[in-house]
Image (cartoon, rainbow, N blue to C red; front, top):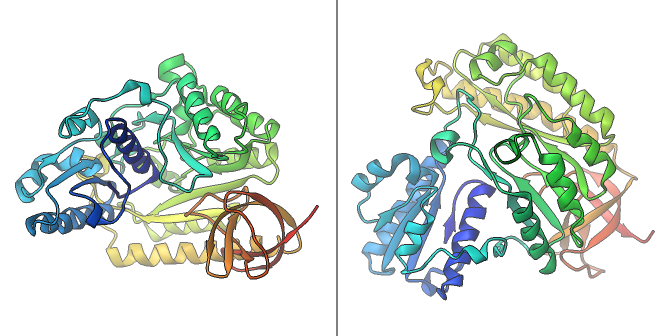
Length: 426
């Protein structure tokens, strides 16, 4: 099983592997090709770069199949959902293509049945101390630049009871941290319970014994359910961390993006979060080069970023996606200017991150040990999600730390994005 794209795709791959193993079919995630005679590629179709990576990977394994090194090649995921007919025509070496909701069809190629009793028993491919939990599928938002609803459909929440069962199973197997993910977290529950129910879900998950950290990814700012901050402030298991992609700060751009929020409302939400949850780490992403984005509109985004001083920030360059609302606009910002603006905004964030990291020198933090790399342990604070955020580097020469354990460290040095820490005993 090969996974491309986001953590939501990784969860899908883990579900496929779980179902195959449950049917007594040996399957593993990105193992040695010499051990496998069938390859399943789970693709991403979000933006141009992701599509290019997916197509190149399919072509690579189509060539492997033609050489006789594997027997079968199957493709699933977002790219396959969106461009199945084109792919079938252009890369016929693939034995079958499946969309995002066609797991039973994929399993049928293995003469395997979908086993409902495995719900909540998902095997994970991440380090055993953390796991991603997809609380819903699809999205009902109408952002003009986004193709996700085309590939994932409408929002469908998973029941609280099912998610709690999954969390208990993870905890039983040593998972200490849950990353809650969805196309859009804050819409959770509206379809099942006729109200936003993320706060209820958080309370239920926080009660699961053995789960120390619960982290929120991909929340939408418009009509944000502010009661989430009350739960975050009152329950130590809920990390003081929020991933809330804002995309832009200029009102005209936000209107063209159909984000259903203004800069003023955005600032009020961020300030409210920081007031209710002191020390909260806010991660966001911004989109530069949207059709018609002027220099003044971009400068509004820069000024906003400087003023708000986000703890974590990433930048995407606009990708002109067919069948989206924005595709009707003229993609008039050149790729060179998109790159220039991306670099400029990240330079601003780098200064902010360095300033914030410097303020942590001398402070003590509880960290989770993720891995060992040479003579260093790699750890994270409550303010950091794996792979996308900052790391705490600890000298491994003269001490032994167990992967997956929590320890207390004192920060002794800081760089733009990473911290240097030493273990202390409180």
